[in-house]
Length: 360
Ligand SMILES: Cc1cc2nc3c(=O)[nH]c(=O)nc-3n(C[C@H](O)[C@H](O)[C@H](O)COP(=O)(O)OP(=O)(O)OC[C@H]3O[C@@H](n4cnc5c(N)ncnc54)[C@H](O)[C@@H]3O)c2cc1C
Image (tube, helix red, strand yellow):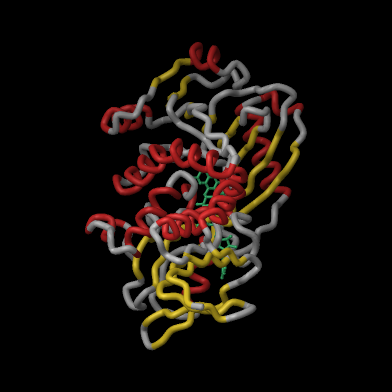
């Protein structure tokens, strides 16, 4: 059998790309080397914002803004389709003791993003469990969060409902080419054929491409470790950002602390050093956590790139090959517009600006 489209990699990016394409009327197969959503997409915090939103290019800003605007509708549709609620929550975000206050305020004004500057007293009233030493914070009241494991579960069920053929435990080992056109992929089990192939395999994208093409992306794995706490009662209501680290309070008392940024190749181990570092930062931000045990500690590999935007593009040399990868720290918030641009590219509906902005 020949599929219309073969999507390689079943993280959130591949899953939503497959879903869009199937809904466009294509016959789609999604091929995943482990289980759907078990890599970076599962491990993520689910913050629907950049950590320091003013530190981004206009192109990334566009993708993030579209993602933020699209999440409520997708979560609702998924809830109706599958009964699974990805727990979208507008918790707001507090960025503490930022040196770049004026830049942040100017950025917010330019982008019509609500933002408030809080002094020590206001901060203390809003979040009494933060360390009292903090003197100011920026509050972005509209920032939302989702629960990535629930989102993945919901999208998985939706893919089954829409009739996407899902192949798990099927590692793609090679692309199959006829002259300079891709016609399918080899997995460890079989050869699968398709009219078009799109690589959505996150941190492993360049590894697979290397076997086929001299043209490189700069995508590389960047490990991130996280800790999970469950204090006896909710200690925070906002997402808190401080010195590059963050705390994400869920509604059911779970609280995540993230994350490290480590260039250690494809190792997905957790380390004692990172556990201690994250614990230290968590307790510095919210001293009440000193008394709370760490319930879980995990790590995953982000698809890192030095560009500010992902690669969402046709391969410049291999016909019928596409890529939607390199979302680095922001592949949850940007997943919906990225999947839309990718499926528009394949369906020849993308506009010139989309084609050039995310090009190879
Ligand atoms: C600790 C941490 C916290 C994060 N927090 C946030 C956040 O708060 N907000 C946000 O927006 N983003 C966050 N991110 C980033 C986000 O998780 C990623 O950008 C996003 O998940 C990337 O999605 P993906 O589908 O490209 O990659 P992945 O989820 O890694 O999926 C790629 C998939 O491809 C599969 N694959 C690889 N090679 C092959 C092959 N040869 N054949 C078949 N399948 C293959 C893998 O098994 C994997 O399942 C975080 C990431 C980490 C690690």
